[in-house]
Amino acid sequence: MNKEETGMKTDIQIAQEAEMKHIREVAEGAGIAEDELEFYGKYKAKLSDELWERIKDREDGKLVLVTAINPTPAGEGKTTISVGLGQAFAKLGKKSVIALREPSLGPCFGIKGGAAGGGYSQVVPMEDLNLHFTGDFHAITSANNLLAAMLDNHIQQGNALGIDPRQIVWKRCVDMNDRVLRNIVVGLGRKTDGMGREDHFVITVASEIMAILCLATDMHDLKRRLGRIIVAYTYDGKPVTADDLQATGAMAALLKDALKPNLIQTLEHTPAIVHGGPFANIAHGCNSVRATKTALKLADYVITEAGFGADLGAEKFFDIKCRKADLKPDAVVLVATIRALKYNGGVAKADLAEENLEALKKGIVNLEKHIENLQKFGVPIVVTLNAFETDTEKEHEFIRQFCEERGCEFALSEVWAKGGEGGIDLAKKVLKTLEEKESNFKVLYPDNLSLKEKVETIAKEIYGADGVTYEPAAEKMLAKLTDLGFGDLPVCMAKTQYSLSDDQTKLGRPEGFDIHVRDAFVNAGAGFVVILTGAVMTMPGLPKKPAAFGIDVDDNGKITGLF
Image (cartoon, rainbow, N blue to C red; front, side, top):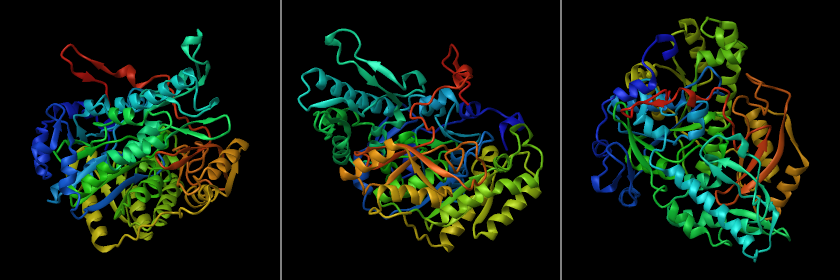
């Protein structure tokens, strides 16, 4: 069900009416002592390094990934399902922890209005999470821009490293969608105002610092990764790093607290560790390695989420995060909605409420491809439908049969309307899968394939492309990165989330297409090579009617309009 059809309370109304427990009580339920918390008010806390030291040798719980079909304007609800499933496990008496990412302000004020789940399956305090939370993103922004400032200052102060201003690759960042900052000119004015050059901004979550924070295991690892960041190249083509600019220590100091995971709660008081963002703006949408690993030591069942469709979020979760952090997921929950599948079958958004089995048959090929893709990683799958009031029994039954024919468990979810209670069937199906089906997790490609072979493996196996075409700039950069010794790194594909192809208008299961690679760059600190396809932006703009139009705060400090 969905508030649009029911006239029910908005997400923010539900969240504001909730009775939250003090975070020390939530922590206590997860076996965390009060002196292992660093409080941010009554309802948020950071988890101390001491906690990790105490629990690090425990056996891991089961890891369940929540992912989805390709997103549509009709909505899928991954976070809502993740939260609802965690609550359902708790209702069944199972010790569960949810691990989620922090949202960016750009989408909150731009398109989405928030990212805390929905209805009666939300994490709270909802407003805090969607706004500044514990300041992690501000710390990332500051560290990123400190490096940018030190780079330009180095050039101003004599340029001892011989940096070629035409080959600067480090961009500034801000946690807001602002298209006019994509391509700018800096250093105008007098000689003392710096060297004039073209510069660029990305959104904070697209910065390499975000990826580094998400993948770092501890302070030592964080500093090692920060130091490896390539900011520019010299006149003779040699890379210049953050270590070369002597910026590493100061950046790490800014990130000291941001490195610690955050603990909040769901509406039903299930613990939720929220940390890290949808890094690299390439739809990873996943929490940090530290958050996931901490959750696995605290709970028997950990529910985590990867952003956008499984072709992006799940692929990156498996091929980058699991590879780097040695994680072995035990099951995958694949989220779909009847509405989204009908949309993939060619139905206009305005007509999605009407039963249409023909359109469902056409659109279900998108779900089919995602099932096939996930099976390639060797992890058992449960498909769930996020139920809407407009769905019909015939439509549900069609999907159920379709999934069971392909060896997947199937469950309806009503967690938006009913909270944990609406996820009991799904939780039981996940438990059944964990008990009966072994996960034989494996990554899609080995490290020793060439960068081009890795790109082509993903393009053909996951997207269903015939092949890959490269623009000259991309060819040149991939050759250069290989020469510099980065050929063994995994690739991080930047592609539209709306289609399995790189053309967002091609819905369903496109065939007979190539993936077009226009450029590439290395995130040496994070440890992957980013492959840019199609028209993906690392600095999105705001829409004509941004969500910010509807957001306000009254004289008493009560926020409205945030979802």
